[in-house]
Length: 126
Image (cartoon, rainbow, N blue to C red; front, side):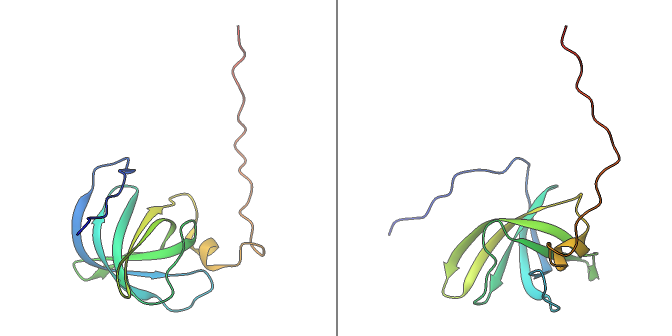
């Protein structure tokens, strides 16, 4: 039997986990239950059983649970979706820290983030 291998794309150290995670696609009012497998400072991987998985590149909302306490929903970008077995999938996401979660739940064509007031200038080349 041939074993499937993945190329290593992670930028940070991972910590194994065994906690509940909830996720939902934009526009959905209900969270789907999943099981966190590992996490890092910038993302996490979780197992999920179901038919309608998110696709790579989709934005979703993630709500983590640790010691029985749920976190606030966070915006996340789906980086990997691996079909493990029948209806079991492993989903890897990158947490998008600078995007409020309510933008993910709303239609992107209706809500646009406010432009930054920060002015950037390039240093002159000497």
